Length: 236
Image (cartoon, rainbow, N blue to C red; front, side, top):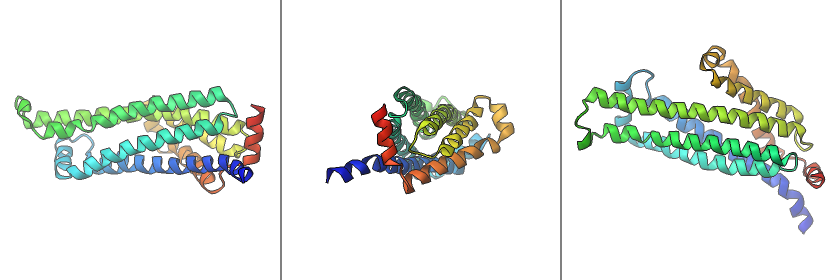
């Protein structure tokens, strides 16, 4: 009975990693792009404030979903570290560390999204500001949050490049997925130069769509080659 369980363990971890990858992507897109995309009006502090005040439960839902996304992503990071440790323990640990640092930045940025609610509520201590100033201040915190998310994406870009390397060097996952993930990471890294990213958009993110989707689907449907994973783990 122990042999089938041992055989299934690496494949189960791979499928769990794929599941948490999907959960991370889904919650992140919902919280960061769908909710904020609906409520934040680019360059218009007054309209943004009106949207937030009119849809406070929806705004808070977006914040909560983003925190959930961070939790899912931490679990995914641990699972990926365990999966790729036999390939190269040092690189796998470095990748996990980089991603966790990025998640810490994202978490801080997510907390900044609570500031507009407190500012726009108009407490007694805010009476020294007029309405326009309060709306501008609330919008400023949202901009800081967006910049923190951009910083996270850069760290995630490095993470994707390292994951791509580990997948390519592994014997238990298709090498083409490793190449696609590395290209996805390079696409994200264009955000280091915002003018370049804006010039290349949306083509700089196409590799991410291919690479990440391929990895998610492969892990969910196939998992990995358990025999080759164990061979590589034994060699390591």
